Image (cartoon, rainbow, N blue to C red; front, side):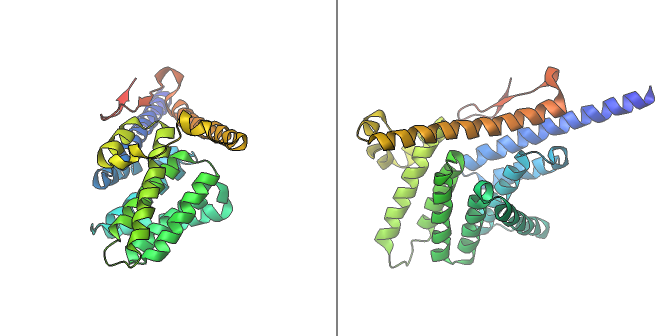
Length: 273
């Protein structure tokens, strides 16, 4: 009887830890979408307290990438992270590079993005721009809409912050606009309504440019229309795959009768149903 109670207590504790991890992780993702880097870092460190519960799940890779990206952004902005946190970022970079070498189709764009941010941190702007371009191209070729939106926006921000004193000013400004247009288009495709509205408010020129509307598609060749449809299907499949992995984790930890789903509410905190 005492053994049964101990096992039940362990399961309840694991269930609670799993829910807390998912909550903090999703909150961090929301903070990243709105460039709230300090808040995102705090949420990620809260989620890390429960990381052992999700070992072996696909969400761990996304967590490691998000933590590394946010940490590098904070360092770029002059934040003084604790030595332990800086070492963790260094270790994450090595881990992501290893994953990229083993499974480039899944992780190479993460590695390129991390290297781009690292070069930016060192002031090597041209190398940073080169790696951002490679990362964005990689996400587009593999139809990773979510990552493409995040990385393209990050590239635009980093490029814009490095404009002072540059000789190729006009070209860089155009690149900033193009990356921002790309991020806007992929946020639309992703369905991130709050982010799209924020972009419209911050950068009015985005609504004056061509996006993937029905009018634009009418002007495409049959081959291009087919490619667009293939990309849309691929995006849907990848989104479902990630969502299913989160559901699978929750089912494993909480059980079907206690499954908790988190839903993102526009411009508000995550709500549970």
